[in-house]
Amino acid sequence: MDITKIGEFLIKVFNQYKSDKYKENFAWIDQIQNIKSSSEKEKLNSFLIESINNNSNQFWMAAPELVDWENIRGYKYHGKEIFDDIDVNEVKKSFSNPLISIDQLKSKQISVISSLDDSKLMSWNSLRCIYGECIIDEQAYCINAGKWYRINNSFVKDINTEYASTIISQIDFQERTYVHDSESAYTIDFASKNASKFLAIGVCQVSCRV
Image 1 (tube, rainbow, N blue to C red):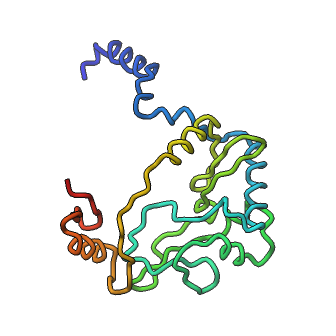
Image 2: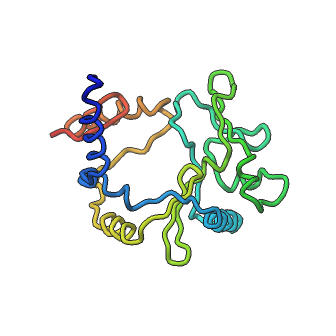
Image 3: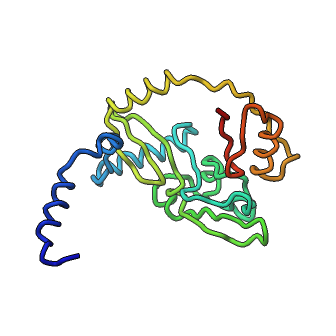
């Protein structure tokens, strides 16, 4: 870059910064705000703890990163037992004392166990594995990988309306059985048995034929 033209470059950068062209494809960005207020986080965390203790289905747990499922035996978070999934109720049972604080979730580790040698592949604190949504005082919120966000209520309404109008797929997927030892094997088998309608692409993806 010609340093003598730095002024022109900075003007272009500033104009891009002020532009709202991103709204054409990413309008949702302005509809979701990261919660920064400590008091608001405390209120939401208290609601989360209460909901988990009441066995509410508003919140669930999942891996916060991409994992190679074919090389994973399961998750460990309660003694030596290995679980197929991260279950919020099982995690709650794993605490030696009643769950009353968000710090307990931060200190509880969820470990991913290898299917090859039972070694630990990766781990996260359990708060990072929590997802869900709720409405408090008529305001919509969601938690994603342990982080709270405020969602504009009008955006929630638009999403719910669009979801309600979505056409339900009529594809008759065959039930997976243990005949297939991997998702790839199931996908290839399904596509081969329905070759007039489907095509396996990239092994793990099934797409309709045109």
